[in-house]
Image (cartoon, rainbow, N blue to C red):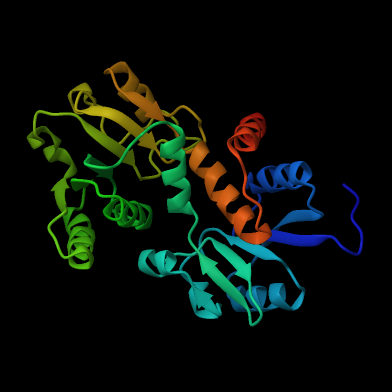
Amino acid sequence: MEINGYTRTCGLIGNPVEHTKSPAIHCFLASHTGQNLVYVPFHVEHGCLEDAVKGGFALNLLGMNVTVPYKSDVIPYLDQVDELAARIGAVNTLVRTNMGFKGYNTDMPGLYRAMCSDGVSLEGEKVLILGAGGVARAVAMLLATKNVKEIILLNRTPERAQNIADEINGLEGREIARAMKLEDYAKLPDERFLAIQATNIGMFPKVNEVVVEDPAFYQKIHTGYDLIFNPMDTRFMQLVRENGGRAFGGLKMLLYQGIIAYELWTGITIDDKLANATYEEIQRVV
């Protein structure tokens, strides 16, 4: 594309940002939707986040993504926060308004669209979540809005998982979530679950690590989602498949969180054909 006086800029703020795959998503979408738009990663040093947000607005940036460690820290510097992002307590997309930026969370809607794309239904499901960190909490928040039957958080520190379960139950006004010690997985009912791996265990370069090794655990999983996208095929996914389940990685979540952000910035709806072409592109660069 030709950069000229009409070119709009979007970008990513975080620390680090050097590993990001987001430019591949947004530049590909811009080139295929006829938008005069570029996407740039911005490394923001600690202590400079407020300056970065105000500077982005002053420089007329159309929007920004936010990555670690700033997804929660950015909220006080925003003009508005979307309801879902406020509930999750994390923002990963900033959309320009007249007075500043409005914050959205497109990670969890991105996960949901990835699941829909893969033919996975949440309604009535019993779901296992591995982990009890910020990602696990956000996943539990999403699931609670999608009419799942039960959410079971498995974590080595059950108190952290119980805090999330209590929060979910309080928000929903019903007992939908509960916590278990990770090592107590054998006490799960003799049935098959949807499982979401929400820890960083198994991420590159420690690709042979997994939260649970025991095949008996994976025999309880009919569908497994690992939110890690590097590597694209994790040990968790391999164990799910080896024990008769379907397995998916985090790359489609990365894709759709980016697509939703792009739609918010431009007002353009990305159809399935272009989404699939973009997915092929990011598979090439990961």
